[in-house]
Length: 361
Image (cartoon, rainbow, N blue to C red; front, side):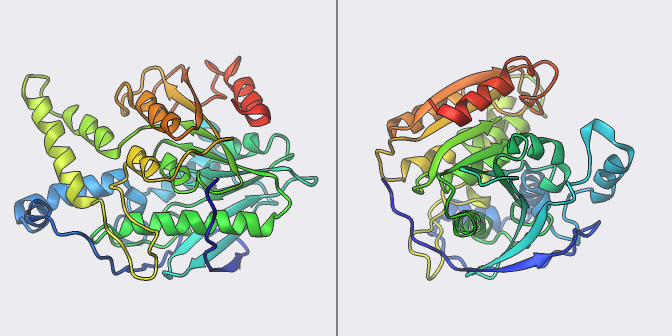
């Protein structure tokens, strides 16, 4: 079993969420390995626009500006009008900001249990809808408040500070932030026997940073992927004519550019164990020491996913199994936004999740 090296952080109590967050910006000095290709790509003026557009499409919450690329006004309007299941966070949810050793801020939202809990769920949201707009889902994860749930804001989203993505700084920040959130959870709830992760879409990046920690026993991966470059390549190729070889060239080009935007092998001073993997989940898992027995991952993919290519969930599952982690892949009916509690899935998926929470695989 892997050991856990504690990190340091400070906690700030946030009495109430602002309607539109007033986020700060944190720069991280990162050392990245030299690559002629990456250097050329990042310093070619013609490529600057598509590079930044791709980067901000993937992580709109970390885009420049006071709100990034998230339309908080529209999301708040959905809550006001009770659209699509949107509702305010429950009144007893506690909001905190963690400040890490790299001076990044991490927003967390804590759903307390109504009795001493043995399980704690850490939830990582996707790239469009921050945690504060997912109350219905987060309440379901509490299982009638018998579990503590901690929702974490990704880098640049909501109460988490924006990190300009220079030389891989965004991924460095995500690793540090995820580690701090896990540390907070286990410090604040030392009697919890197991930590369970639930990630949705891009949120699946989070649990790969923490699955090797001792108390992490289970993961529910909603809309999982193996490699960010595969998702980006699929998206870009879908925007060009369906004529050979245009789609293949577009997919290859997107993957190459993504490697320059989110490099592998970047590091930061004072954190010898932290290294970027180009947001590749399979590379992150591959770098972990194994075997990791006693851990299970339930991968719930969409039957008609328009964003994640076919085979990505299975590819991730195969890598996890190489590390001794038990896996199960199951389909949810619908597209990328499908959830276990949707009308088309509610007959079997929630029961499968609860069985997994109780017994693993």
